[in-house]
Amino acid sequence: MSLALRLFATALLTSPLLAHADLPTLQPELGLKARVEQKGENYRLQQPDGSWMELQIPEANETEPRFEVADYDFDGHADLAISVAAGMVNENYHLYLYRPSLRRYEFLAMPETLIDCVNCSSFFGLARKVEERALYSNCRSGPRWYYDAFRFDAQGQPWLYKTLQVQDDYSPDYPYVFFPLFEKTFDTQGNVVASRAMNDDDQPQTWTVPTARLYLHQQPNEASRSKAYLIQGDVCEVLARKEQWLLIRYASKKGPLERWISLDQAYDLHQRYSAAAHPDGLRLSMSDFSDASSPLFNLGLDGDRPLQLEHAEVHLLFTAENGTQSSHRLYAANHQIELKPGEGYLLDDNYIERQHGQFVIYHADEQQQDAYVPFFPQLAPGRYRVRAVLTDPGLATPLYSAEEVLIDYPLAIAKKAGAP
Image (cartoon, rainbow, N blue to C red):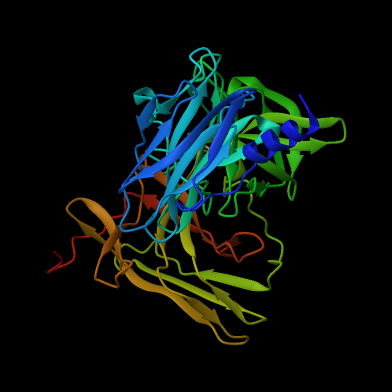
């Protein structure tokens, strides 16, 4: 091929979007041409053999279509894309791929087998990533952008290579652990071959080990625990989550290490307890509520420096006489806590009550409406040591009450007169 023809073909393959006044001519192969023509309000494509095909224009509200010539399926031949604005930010695309075996262009519809697997119901905001040989479809829903990436098989049909999957896996059992988005990479059979959590900036999301020692597991089960462990402050990339387990990648001195860790162990408030002074200079005091005739739960906070907590949660730790330990998330504060040095902050001052056979305590809900929350979890009868814990993303470590209350469960609390 002459230098002039090579430059002409390259220009066609990399041409920018064309307004309807500059309708493109395509050269899919040496000696073959196709062109787009407008006829009234319609558009049509003249195939290399001279026949005509009506072009489908994406639906739009009074916007002119734009045309782009590029190699969308990475087979070395020029393809045609037609796009129109869809709403404020999205761009809807129709694709016409050149089929070398037929020497003609064909409309590419989203395969029905993929419609339920993708974020964008059709092709939107197309971007070619040559280094991946992948075609990215980008659409915005709500406050963020989502993407689906496609590769093409030998027949020129797309298969889902990569996508963002929305996860709804927030669990109050693990304070402030939330991985809403995972990028999944698939093989041609639809099997997941790679996974990683992503943040709102489309960057890999990391997680910091919150406890002094955290053992690594080969599989998401206790039986596969190894002798290796991470220490508090180690930063890991999150690859996947399976219930109470995280698959993490840690950059060790010997190279990247991919292992499972237990969230139950990482966020075990019993194991994280320390009697040392809190690094934030805070103190948590708890009243003795073991008196069944006056079971007042009083919780107070004070500190040496100003502090604001936005997402504080109160937890209770129970230790039975036989050493069995359990924890209970009592409630989320549901309001901002602003602490001033030298001034105490009253977190709670309410009675434990018994209603319908259950122990409860008054605590307003997120709408600041009257509400009662369970005070005790399902405990076996017996004697327990109880300690309160305050957690918040703004705290260096959980804050434990200095006091530990001894109770006999169940408490002999009568139903409060007039209680609902």
